[in-house]
Image (cartoon, rainbow, N blue to C red; front, side):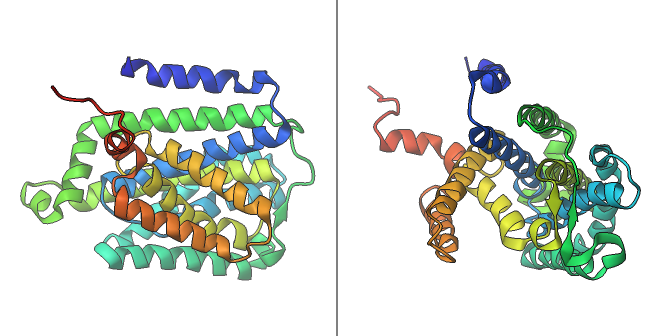
Length: 313
């Protein structure tokens, strides 16, 4: 039965817009799929390859600005930014990899965090290209209704899921896990760890960049503080995978549902101010202590807690 879960899930996702949901609910579905896509990309690099990144906002922002600059400076359709962002972000990810992949552990994490901040500050000051803090706004979006955007991000999410499934089940996936478990041992076995870490970083960055380009087209406005945000992009991405389950195929989807719903609940209250960050922090502490493998990874533990596990004779 489990082998049919992806097909059942896809069938449900395909018919959701036909059920007459409100515009707001459709907006939530779009955000869920977008964040699940970003979570899957981070999971490839950090969950399977063990290179914990705090700088995925850099890739997200570069992808968003690729679409935005294409529109504002070249007068072209920002939708061309989706395929173009694959190339642009791939090049930047490769360059970043040449610098940060020399480092390990917390040093790598800090270097990726710094890269996101470098791009944010650069976007603020390169007004001739990015309009600085004024940002870039689409004067007219292609569609008014949410359904076209939903199906576009659904295609991106499904394609990402299938790509992740293929990569993890291939020889590349075994190399990634070997590097995560013990990079020195992988080196001694003849695995070119630098090459495969670079592949993981570039693929992860390109997928995140496509999500950023989609965000530009969907929201219609970006500025450096939105798309290069440490907390609202990089940290939320990490929490999505941590909550859902690191190095699991369905973890990013589960984590995206929980985090997006929590964000919307906190936003609806409105009077919490900075307290919402404390709520996210407490959630992360709870996950680390009680469900270190995330909801999907520790689902058996959750079932046993509620008395749903198998009872042995």
